[in-house]
Length: 137
View 1 (cartoon, rainbow, N blue to C red):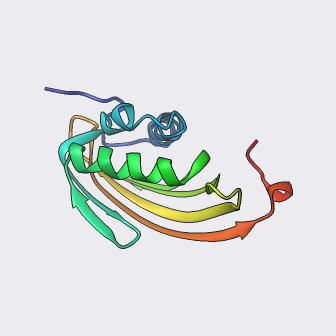
View 2 (spheres, one colour; view 1 turned 90 degrees about the horizontal axis):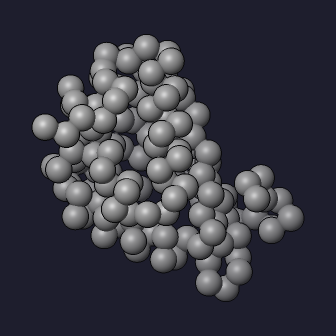
């Protein structure tokens, strides 16, 4: 059985560690590495897309990072209880024309007993920014 500590139920410290681990993994922009944090049948909502399973997650992330160049993410623990964590985040990226964007959003995560995420729901909004306005270099 796959195990991805820290395990639920979460404390403040373990919830923060889970959020930091997610931030670190996503900033690698490596879909295969990122998918290892999710159950094989993990359910996702990302903006208006709904899908499930590691293969679909990897395909989504490959499309995402092919479009969102020089992606850099910062996550912050918002709240937690039992096997659930809520996160606020922002990330920056540019397209292939050099236009920069900052995305703001919230995620709700639900974990299986083995510490893998079994459900992720994300609401995200993008705003155009000037390169000089970037926070994450």
